[in-house]
Length: 147
Image 1 (cartoon, rainbow, N blue to C red):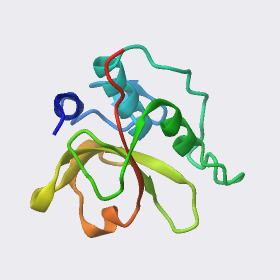
Image 2: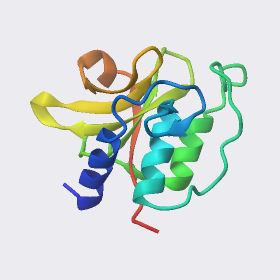
Image 3: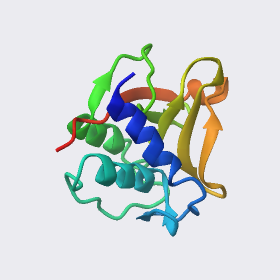
Image 4: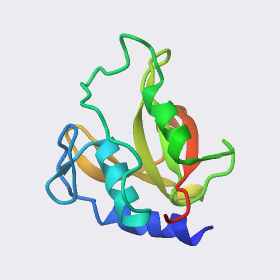
């Protein structure tokens, strides 16, 4: 278990209770799933590595392009699918055949596995990493070392 991963979890838990706001990334005021990850990145690593273009709720679905996955590969460190650790960035495919477009940060592992994410209608919450959520994970990454 890395110190950086534990720090990411601690920071993400500081966002719990932030209301859901599409395209926002402001702890306490509003965030979506990408905004939560962006906020933790700023606190953990430093300045964001690239700007985020405006996006709609159905972004990438028309083209089928895995935009979020490609961005994660550019800036995070890929992790093997079977090796989970606190602080891992989780990328989810919400429907079979759809692009991956939901993010969360693994908080706990083992029998009490959980993850922190911003979810429409719920805000930033810590949820059990239950079987239905696990089935949707398509990739996991670690934050890069502080910059």
